[in-house]
Every structure is written in C-alpha cells, then in structure tokens.
Length: 561
Image (cartoon, rainbow, N blue to C red; front, side, top):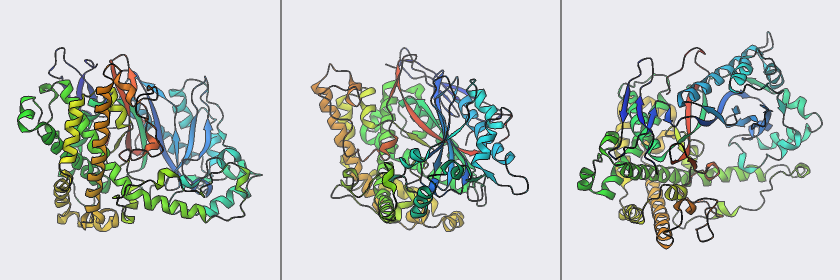
C-alpha cells in the first residue's frame, strides 16, 4: 500500500538544508519530512492555542466551552475552552494547509494575535481585560485576532457567543475537576449566577501572564502522519534536536526544565526501541536487512519499507507501554482526588436542574484493575503531563494500527514473544538506569532542587514501580498482538483494517469495550485512522506540542522547538 511519498529532511532557521531519503524498494517509497512534521500534500489540521489565564471559579473546571465563534459556511465552530491551571485556549475547527510549516506558522501567529487582542483591549489605567471586552474586540475587523481569523477563514467573522448557563452546566462533572481547584466555590458561583449568567461570564478577567510559564503559552497542532513518517520524524528530527540542545545545556538557560524533560523521555524511548529491535530481529538479521542497531542511526536509504514500518511499530509499542505505565501509576490517585472533591460538594446545591454528571456510583472502567497493578500517589504529577513528555502524541489505537498496516501474524507473534521474554528483567530496567546516571551529574543539582518531587521520583530511585508497570503492560500488549495474529489467520480474506475499525464485521473483536486497553493511556484522546488516497496509505493524527506561543514577531516563520 504505500509506495508513495518523499522523505526530505529540512533543518530549521534561515539555512535550510535538504536531504532526500528513499527506501530500498523497487519502486522506492518516499516520505517527506520537515522540521515541523510529515508533509502529505494539502492536509487538514486543527489547533489548540492556550493564550491567557483567567479568574473565573466556574472555568476552573477544565474542558468547559465558554465562548463559541461561528466561521460560517457550515464549518465547525471555534471554541474558547478552559484548560488546566486556570488557562483558556482557543480550539479551532479543521483548516487545510499546503505544508506543515504553514500550519505551524499559523498557530504561532494565532497565539501572538490573541495576546495582542488581550493587551490592546485592557481598560486604560487598570490593565484589566474582561472576557466581554475581548469578545467585543474580536468583532472588530482591525483586531489582530479577527484579522488572523479572516486570513484562515475568508468568510465574515460572526459575533462570538457566550455559552449558555445550561450548556456550561452540562459540562460540569467529576472528570474535569482540576486538582487544587475549589469545587464548592465553583458550583456555588455557577448556581448563584443563573439569572445573570452572560454578565457574570463576561466579567471574567483575563490576562497574558507568563510568571509561572517560562516557555510561554502552549499550542497544539493535530497533524496527519503515516506510521513510518511519525517514526522517522521522532528519529531524525526530534531526537537530534534534543541531543544537540542537551550537549550545550547549562543551568540558568531559558526553558531548561522543558528541554531536559524532552531529551530524557525521547532518549528513553529510543533506547527501549533499540533493545526491542535487537530482541525481535537479532543482530545478524539487522545487518542483513540494513537496519541500524541504534534508532538515531536509522537510514531509510538502506531499508525496505516493510522493515521501516516494522521498526516504527516497535517504537510505537515502546511509546504506548511507557505512557500506559505512567497512567497506571498516576491515574488512581488523580481520580481519587477528583471523586473526593465531587462527592463533598454541598448537598443542597440545585445542580439537578441541569444534567450535571452524577458520580455517586463508581464507573466500572475506573474500578477494573489487574491484581498485580501498582499505583503510587508520588506519580500523580505525571497525570496531566503524559501528552507533553515527548512533545508529541500518536492518537490512533494500537489495535487499529495493526490492522491498517497489515502486519503479518508471524511478525506480531515474534514481537509478542520478545515482550514476554524478559518479564523479570525488563529492557527498560537498564535503559532507565543509564538515563538516570546522566541526570545524576552535578551540573543538574539545581534543576532537581527547583523542580522538587517532579524529578526526585526518578533521581531517588523510586522509579522501580515504573519498570514493573511497563513490564505488566508489555505482557498485555503481547496478548493484543497474539489476538490480532489469531484473527488474521482465521479470516485471511478480510480487509485487515476491519480489525480495529468501527466499520468492523461481527466476527472482529470489539474495538470499544467497557474497560479501555491499559496501553492507551488517554483513551478519550483516541482518534480513527484516516485513509489518504493520494499517497495510497493510512494516516494517523499526531498531536504536536508547540511551545513559546505568542512570544514571536508576526513577520517571519519561527523555527520550531
């Protein structure tokens, strides 16, 4: 299926260096990469742009749509929604760009324009901006954000509309409680302002505040990538960038914590992938197939496309095993805090007037745990950062990737055997130990001191629960690989993508179950694979984090971080 598209690697900044990579097939398979992602012609992207903080207790609940912007022409509405840490973010509908670079440039321009809108709409003398003032400015075609909006959506900008009291009430519930928020105060504010809701919401003070956000506000771009393109992007763009940065890093540099975090987890995944490759293929087979033993040294010029996809699957499995383990460690404590806060809300609040979630009963999906599952309150800080550790998030489910990419039963069973082969001495044990030895260097002392428990859980060798969790989830993934292999052999004539697709046949295992697979750390974020006829391949949405939103000039494209 995929003898298609080009791989050209371009460096950021003024001096762009182009290198063409082509697989060793006849005809060759080409995949086009840039600093920002994989180039797949004209593609649709969606953005999430965090752009300010606010003081509204009700919006301390996360994922609350507070303001809607209708772009017209039947296009999906844009939303201003609440995010973690008393922040607001703009969530766009799909927008088509010719290149990834244009999409990333657009999200940065949007962030900068939003910051200008806030600062220029501040009340003279007070420096305060209300949500009503901000939405009023967005009706002005000369406003920086309105201008950016019209450049992306040529239709006339419709007047922003506040979400109604009922609409907000339907979104309040246990699952979007932000840890540390005052749930009772938020619910009381909500109930007591039923009659003047729009005035109350409009009086929310918003501001651009970076005091506790060293890297600036965060943007996210959902972009399509093939499985092989995603792997090569992480191996040939993200890893070299992290390596170069860490080699010259010193204490006191701006963004130190974010960059060390980026290097640590990306390097950890690369090391685990290396060990998977050696275990699945063996040293001699790696040589004969032209597969480098180190992920950093992968050269598609020397590889067949199927081998490239096979290594990409191993990397994806490492990624999902790690994120699933972190979720298993952090989620129980996080969810327990949410439940406690929700149950302790005042009993006399008339929240039953709107269909607010009732969480008096325990959801079965939260209760279902394996007997040997380990959880630890010390890891609760990782719950909100799972999607940020490596700077990207592959949103398709492993089940669907197995089917869409048509992996053979023999290969799946070989991978499953390797995942079970070292249950007691996981490949992650020595890998993580090597990573931590680097972080034990004296030059990082201040970093660990400043960050506190967020890094000390690793440095003080409380990381063994993580290794045990990864080994447990590896065994679960092995079971999924065997299940797919069995299904493929029972139904050799069926299109393999039916295995994990909502359009599956009745004989396929259920893709949606009461208990989500443990390796899918954020099951609510899972999105379906997308067929791309132009390149005759399946693509998957990858959520890329874009830092330093709003800190750039509007004039020139910015090199990605």
